[in-house]
Length: 349
Image 1 (spheres, rainbow, N blue to C red):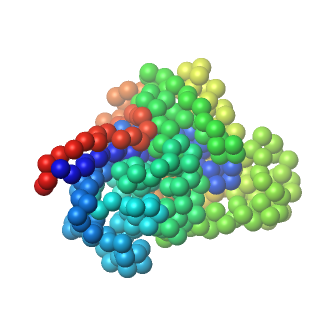
Image 2: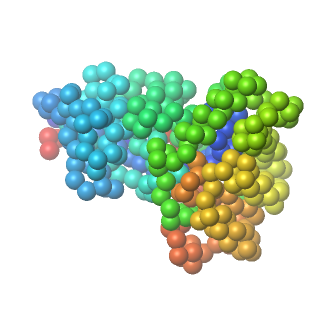
């Protein structure tokens, strides 16, 4: 008999509050019903882990000697699994099968979902914030990119029917019930993005420069803006402060059911990401503008890090016909967070 365990981890769509997590601000994501599931069949007699994915051709064998820098270029996706294997003591061997409904390179946290699902089946002995921090570390090992905790916290703490207000200053979170007349549509721009090859690192480093100059930014006050003399850094600071303030406004608007005003905040957020943070591209801008012309669409904005990937729109139910967009698009719902699905004994395969 072999042990079999399956875990699933949702993707993440950020309704508002991007590029605020690594500067101790606020964000309002949902965990989605698009997810990644990992099934591990443990074989104590094996000295390797055979990994396959329905998103990629071929397979990769991971042994105790496998390292990230030894993986072939066409196996970059497996770096996340190797980083986990290197970080989890007494990692298991056998067969690991990955299935996913999350589009790759879309800004919907497919990599973080993969890491979370695999981390759970590997037996990463952590929960909650400790698990999020552990996965943040293994993501850095896999990609070389230092990021915040947005993806990991959204994926771990997701709740069906609710957005999550995340505070990256004290790592607290609060659930915000979404209105019933609230449909969330995600549309891919057609441009795949990779954080490791984008200007994400540059933006991260700009915040570190800001901290050196003025200390940690305070989203509750605009006074620090007067201290920033560098034009580029001023724009970055202005985005952070205004974006975190929009998250607080969004909370109140969702509580009151004012979806029109919530949509307006989304449009303001996209403008800030485009002009002050400079992470949008024409394909994203054009897509946002196009969706805003559709009757029943309250608001739209890029979601995630930018530089490609997806936009998110909120609208009256049925306002957007997905098949008419000529782009990959999904209707998504707020979902529960990552969890172990099954764990049982099975016959040898």
